[in-house]
Amino acid sequence: MSGGVEWALHCCVVLTTSSRPVPAARLAELHDISGSYLAKQLQSLARAGLIHSVQGKSGGYALTRAPQSISVLDVVHAIDGPGPAFVCTEIRQRGPLAAPPSACTSACPIARAMWTAETAWRDALAAITIADLARDVDDDSGPEALTTVRAWLTGEPAG
Amino acid sequence: MSGGVEWALHCCVVLTTSSRPVPAARLAELHDISGSYLAKQLQSLARAGLIHSVQGKSGGYALTRAPQSISVLDVVHAIDGPGPAFVCTEIRQRGPLAAPPSACTSACPIARAMWTAETAWRDALAAITIADLARDVDDDSGPEALTTVRAWLTGEPAG
DNA sequence: TATACTCGGACAGAACAGGTCCGAGTATCA
DNA sequence: TGATACTCGGACCTGTTCTGTCCGAGTATA
Picture (cartoon, each protein chain N blue to C red):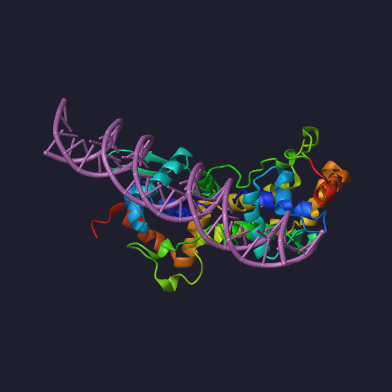
């Protein structure tokens, strides 16, 4: 799994605190990560429609939808792509004992097993929203944590 | 996910048909895949203890345990490694608003969410055994399919 | 004892994630 | 109204992992 997923999820959570656009550079400074590379992840989120970009002097990124309507799966798909991790190359139809196409109307048992597991994985991720994550942060670190982040993102003078 | 997982699973399934060791080259020919590269995957399976190698003239690979006691998860772990796909880099402890270590006694909510999903994925794979896959192949293609494979693996003269 | 066949690890090439850079575009402010 | 400074967007380069190949070590066979 791409490491950018972690960055993207953290950014989505902190973006819930601000209704105004936040520049990518500020998000990168908050997390002490590469701003140039984070920009690429945010572009992926924008292409997926999860966040929208505002250009110009006071531009940046902001969530497009309400946090409770953005699932973790949405973010993972935006970064890593929506395709399944396991790809069946139909090797049962190759070699000297190749199965005839007439016997391959359904996916082979191995692919079915892998896809069943991936479905369970996706279902679990789809059941968790960005709002859930923000609430969990509150439960863990107290409400002042995200409040401090909000203040820092929107208006701190200088560090 | 590594493409070698598909090869390894197919090999485990066909190995259930033969109690005698099968050379890697024959397994590769059966599936029409690279023998040199398949050898590497089989070595991973051997290191994990799922199959054992027999050297010498009539050597090859054979399953170590009964097919019903080898789960799909065992094979995936042997090929792709047992580590989790999502790795938390604890970026909450970095940057100007870094959370103090005292507030990080438990994993961050994002890591918890990802690991919950991975657990669901692993549970699904652990619930399926190589014996289940072999039975599914019988259900799909009829019992003669694996019987033919067994004959081809053990004793065909030349092709 | 010679042999032929097997596995095992060491050695290149390709694809992808990670990381960086500069140009296009827009709201701001004089 | 126009210059400016700040933003995003995509093109470019690098490092690591995955894919693929090769030859040598070891053993059952005849």
